[in-house]
Amino acid sequence: MKLLEERIEKDGQVLGENVLKVDSFLNHQVDPMLMDAIGTEFYQLFAGDKPITKILTVESSGIAPAIFTGLKFGVPVVFARKHKSLTLKDDVYSSEVFSFTKQVSNKISISHKFLNQADRVLIIDDFLANGQAIEGLLDIIGQANASLAGVGVVIEKSFQKGRAILDQKGIKVESLARIKKFADGKVIFVEE
Ligand code: G4P
Ligand code: NA
Ligand code: NA
Image (cartoon, rainbow, N blue to C red):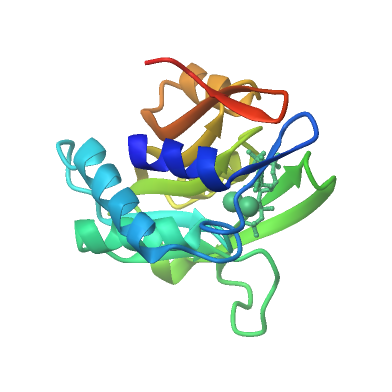
């Protein structure tokens, strides 16, 4: 997605070897006009398939692109919660997600109320790095006996192992920006 790649080049900051900071339009401040274009793009990439009933993501940074995608499909958006809340109680599917970036393990949960075997799900997330967050959502979709339409990612770091893991499972993955590597503080995209 050209608009997104241009925005990454303009406003993204490369930190160290393998982290891209995009807190001016995605991870802290959010640009709703860009999110709207992202929702439209995901709609075009996935609308041709069998009907999607629900968009799934993980709080917090997946929520903005997921909402705009749900808006285009006209379906609800469910975000997995990372912390136990009083109202969540025990009626939840949950999965353990280890973050290599942050070196912490989080339990993610979705209420039984919002996912079941009648659902055909599109997963949307902001980043695909090692794929642990998405694997957690796949685990939860399995527990609910729901089916998967595919995975839409805003920014994929293709040099980390997440993309390969999803490809090996035969999952349809669409990433709007695919980063091949960082070189001298600059972003090099995968060539189409
Ligand atoms: P994984 O889910 O692909 O395995 O990612 P990993 O554990 O490596 O990353 C943990 C968190 O860091 C995730 O956010 C992920 O979206 C984010 N992340 C990974 N690589 C980058 C990067 O290069 N830049 C930025 N800005 N974020 C990255 P999270 O823990 O779910 O946090 P939240 O921001 O959604 O609350
Ligand atoms: Na995320
Ligand atoms: Na994040």
